[in-house]
Image (tube, rainbow, N blue to C red; front, side):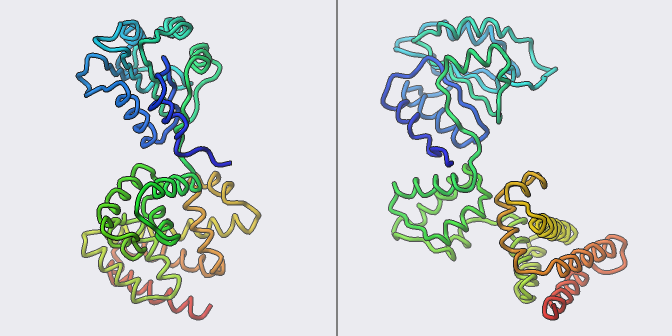
Length: 348
């Protein structure tokens, strides 16, 4: 089931209703964390970190005593003051030997009767908390919880679609798929790129996938993903052109080989796991990689015989060894590999 990824319910409450005395913002998605920060500060009309009604504590360097002292302070010339609590590791099972000793009982007592004039916000950038701890139980009982866990592919896609509904910009399915891939489902990165696309497209209603290719920068990994697709389709011209472009841009050939090897290894592992009945989520968990990478790999490996992938992988391993041992020149070695790969694929 897809979550309300826009967290609009809680954000609307923050904008329209009186702020609650305590919030727990739990999750690792930084973009959504920052949305909550922005809306709370905007609501109280906090102008900056030097505002007398705003305090922020990093709990790896501050104590709960400091937090409670500020939480119990009345606001200056206003109705409410805001206290942000960052990195509250004491809510987790994490052991932090370098941190200060924390008096969690003091926080438990405060949370039983929090001041209405203070908005105490815990930003917990963790996947989960230690539910056995008394302080965690009391916080979850008192605070309004806002879920900002990292979104899955469906949720990121829906977030993008919801955002586009409030803009004059139109993107087709192919363009949306490309943005998701080029930003690696990273919500912060995706929204930053969307801002640039809206600026570019302010005088037009739609932006094509081709324009996005030119506007959204590719990482080396993205380029090698494209290179792998060209190579496995037998397109030596585009494979070598992209290779030459990367070398011209200063990328090390040995690094290119290593990432290409990693890509082929992923394809082989995915092919094998699919064959024995694993689904996308099982493969992602087994290989400890993002499910979206698995999805892309599953789409590609359907086209190829397992034996061909094994042969290409073995050949690339041998080529990598020959290059590193000085038996063959790096650029020539890669060019030979691409031509030989095309020949294998043609005769498969």
